[in-house]
Structures are given as structure tokens and as C-alpha cells.
Image 1 (cartoon, rainbow, N blue to C red):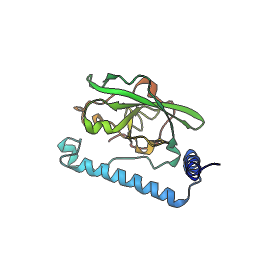
Image 2 (image 1 turned 120 degrees about the vertical axis):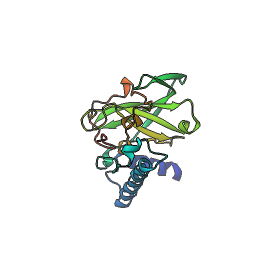
Image 3 (image 1 turned 180 degrees about the vertical axis):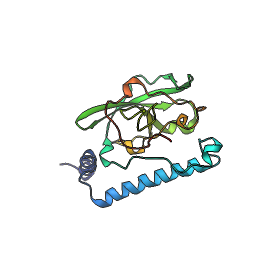
Image 4 (image 1 turned 30 degrees about the vertical axis):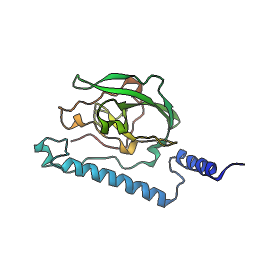
Length: 204
């Protein structure tokens, strides 16, 4: 006999795997409210004198980041494959420095009938940065609609049983706003041929 808990988990997975297409409006509204709060907080951080990554001259005239309209189709249910080698390595950055990261695993999902695999990394130094995974990626919008160097998704740890790749929360690396930041370069394995029109657009 299937337990109630197992049945509930199966139903949840089925709902997520349909990219919210059949969810009730209240669930969709809850997601959109959460996404709006995330974006509002990001704008608040960019305006803040201490937290902002913007140079002072840019911060004072900041009017908010630009985003694609939310696309529930781009909230993907993923399968997590743990990395076989989690040794710390030097990840190259755009300013020719390196940062210490470890390969945490791979997130596998499907989008428009195509399987995508994105490598996820965990910062090896800095306690606050070890609390989430970094998923740096590039796609077909880079250099035109989005930042040329690619974008990032951050996923909180510990991972849930069914992790999500939420492209609506994809963000520009901080070096898009100030060249003094060291930003990891998305590895070749994380370069998608599809255009991902979700999340943050290029900064004007």
C-alpha cells in the first residue's frame, strides 16, 4: 500500500514537472508574489549605500533593474546528480583572477523537449557563500538582451528532494555593474543553445 506521505510527494512532483501549467491561480499568485518580493529586495540592495555593488555615481541615479516578464514555463523541476569529484579547484574569473570552488553536482531538466544539464558549484571559502550553490550559465540571449558574460542562478542549501532551476531568478554577475568584482566564468558545459528570456536583462 502506498503511504499518504509518498502519495503526496508523488503528486507534488507531478505538479512541478508540468511547469505550473495546471496549477490553481492561487499557487501561481503565490509564486509571482514571491518573485516580486525577490526583485524588490534586489532593487533595495542596489539603492543601499552599504550593500549596493554600484559605484556611487551609478547608485545615486539607479532606477531599478530590468527584467523579462515572469515565465512559469521556465521554472524547471530538476534531477540532482552528485559530483564524483568534489575537490576544491581554482575557478577562473573574467578579470583573470581565480576563486576557490568545488563541483557540487549536476542539475538535469527538460526545456522545450530538450534535456539540459547545468553544473552547480559551491564556494570553498567564505561561510556565507557556502550556504548556496552557484549555477553560472550562458544562453543565446547573451550580448543582445542579456549580459554578454552570462548569468547566475543561486540555489539555497540544503537542496530539497526535488530541486528547481528557476530561470526567473537568474541574475547578472556583479562585474556587470563594477569591473572590480571577480566573477566566475560559466564553464563550457553550462552554455545553452536555447534563448532563456527570463530573469534579469542587461544593465543599461
